[in-house]
Length: 203
Image (cartoon, rainbow, N blue to C red):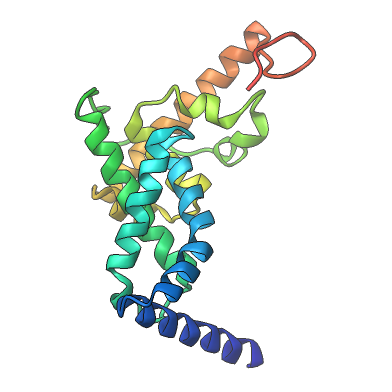
């Protein structure tokens, strides 16, 4: 009971902080930015990589959080609320950037391949960096995978964030996992090792 009461107090304090931000309180804005910057930066880098696109994504995400400060009601943890806003902002930025380098979406199978127990252990199979493998995927599959497996959203939440039907989200996740597994197995067959003693490329 005490833990529940403490959580409510924390959320009440967060509501007060966001109300101050919505009144353009400069100190409150600085406090909020300091607190949320690590969360938003991690989300931006997960979705957009480590380059200037991610830096732009962080700035846009911060602006969106500040703009929506008055809408926070304390029903969810502040960091989770802000991260979702940041994820949406970064996904929109990624979509805008891709308009200059359009790629075809994967065909959505009426019955996508069934998940296997091996899918849940995929990360344990990696001979190298997960980032290296994710960068090889089509953008739509990579985004679905990072939302689900790196940021921890449910499949339903992934579909909502990507603004696609849940079957489309499931297909992107499953096809993405298959593509990752294929790349991993291929690298193992040819003896690729990243950053290891075998002389492979480092990351």
